[in-house]
Image 1: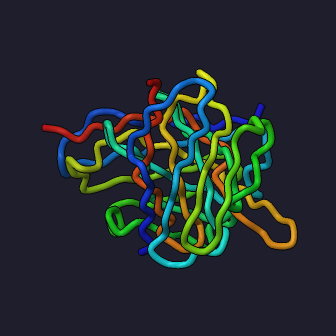
Image 2 (image 1 turned 180 degrees about the vertical axis):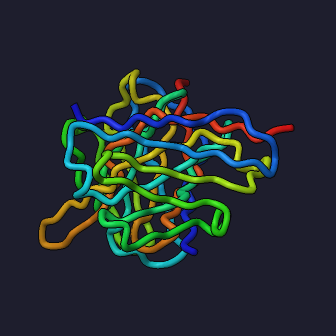
Length: 107
Length: 124
């Protein structure tokens, strides 16, 4: 199975900050990586697919990059509604594993 | 409106069974592969199972293989998860998700639509 390791697991930041979350795969997954945002008590929401393509309706302050084994999610200027937990997921092979999550909290 | 609505969760004793349903609306259900994903209380997301649009291809996580069965009824726009021999560690919110494929030069999948989830609690 492909393991995904996100870092950091917890991130404290302020409105307006630029933040970056990293997702590392245990083996190469090309660009078969997606990012989700999840708020408490809610279902995950798709942010980015194919490692770097923004899902329709997602604000442009979100961006993704990477290929192979290392990927990043960047939020260019944090807004109050961005404080949530973020997950990466690989869809290169089954089982389609998720990272352990990064909880983004208000400083 | 494109929507997925899960039902069937509840409290069940260890060793018991439960059948989850996911009702789809607002899109051509028969054209999409579907998945189940679960989330234990306070924990991360865990992919559980996949079924192709025609039910010809099915995958399971090792943690549920042999105990859970995924199925679908395209005529009823519904996805199911039959869970047997339930264990404490199966306690989670279970989400159904639509498996979309985005194609440009290459094609890439993603779970673009999720239901609200249904809670399954396994406890004596």
